[in-house]
Image 1 (cartoon, helix red, strand yellow):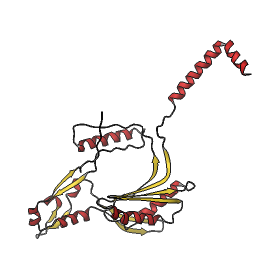
Image 2 (cartoon, one colour; image 1 turned 45 degrees about the vertical axis):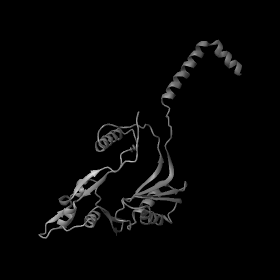
Image 3 (cartoon, rainbow, N blue to C red; image 1 turned 90 degrees about the vertical axis):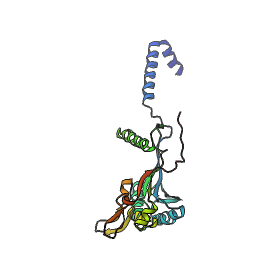
Image 4 (cartoon, rainbow, N blue to C red; image 1 turned 90 degrees about the horizontal axis):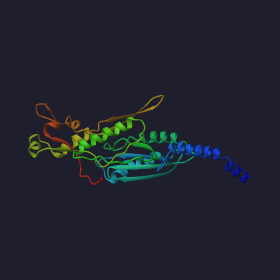
Length: 274
């Protein structure tokens, strides 16, 4: 049977040529539409809970954040394993979900449980809850120039927004620029003049720069969590913090006695380009 098939194509060379042409065209078309992935995207049966806690030690993160989250997750259905990490300024809890359990339901239950905790430290930020996903990295490139970090950061953010606006990219990560910090300076003379101490200044900033949980209100339909978000993210936001008041009743603000600057900490990450 096979020999007859071969003999047919040997005798009919025109048919053979047309078959080869069709095969080549089909191959080129298939190659152009073939999806290529270095690391294919796939979802992991894990949920990540990250909580920033600026200025806290690893022990403070463990006791004030991680332990409370772990306790709130006990008894929830679908959880196979819980792992946690406590570090300076940051706490993370990873929850492994059973393959047979609905992931969307698990995420919602974990969000409800974690967000119902009202005893987080006042300096802790809002928990970030996401499903773990392995992403395919399409490209990586560097942006460099003679400008300062503030200008480069602005360029990077604008470029990121333009790429996301195309609708062809799911996520964009960037690194190499350190996290901003704010420098608040006051002279010893002003401290004496206004009868203040460094502790007074720090307390005023701490009390006015926090996200505060105020409990919850239970209605017939749902439970409403009450939180106050007063975290400062720009240098100008610190200027209106009230520090004290003078004898004549005039309020003294941070901008009246302090020099407030936005700056960068020492960058321990280095990158090169060629």
